Length: 144
Image (cartoon, rainbow, N blue to C red; front, side):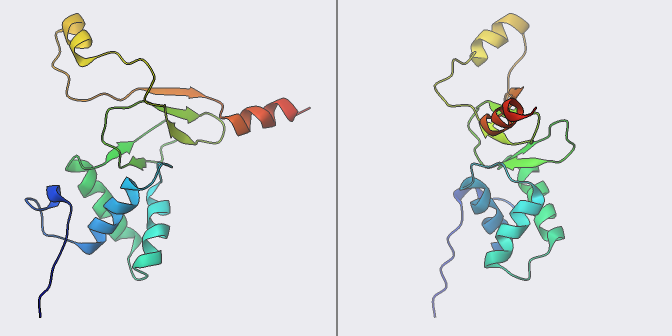
């Protein structure tokens, strides 16, 4: 019998492989909704019904500490996660809390520009815009 395990290349040189961790990483990499730990847990349970919420939290923390996912912490105090590691901006609705990616065509300040202005060596960026999403904007306009 031959057992073949396929894992993300960056998992090969780190901590012991875990099918739960790989599933959580896959959920985040295929999501555009920036889910919370509870939302990741609900999705993971569809494939591994006995997975615990604690396992999801531990793996999210591990993946974030290893730099394989982004933890987005806004003023709500509830962490949301992003599997897209490219430098990109986010926009958050101040009414419903939705977080979305700003389209990649948006003008970006380069690392070189910021480094030359500040003297810092830039490692990564996190810039977020805040406002009302289309649905909340429409609801607000319909309110008396």
